[in-house]
Image (cartoon, rainbow, N blue to C red; front, top):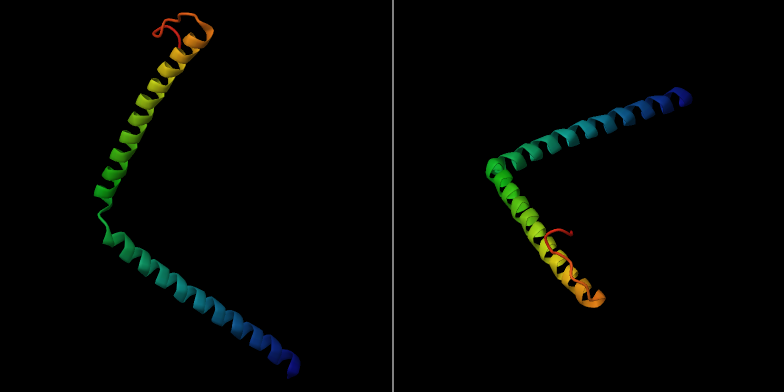
Length: 88
């Protein structure tokens, strides 16, 4: 009885663990459903898109300003004139 009872207890504890995991997964799915229903995802996606467009446009503008300032500094340092529109 000693040998078989240990195996039996081990199987029972494994079954308990899997049941606990299933209950935990069901609770996670329920909480995910509540979270998904809590927000208006369409408006949130528009907001993220607008922020992305603004940041990328700002980067392009600031990068061009930086390149123009850098060209001017290089012209002053090397004492040469470079066309700003031809060289980038």
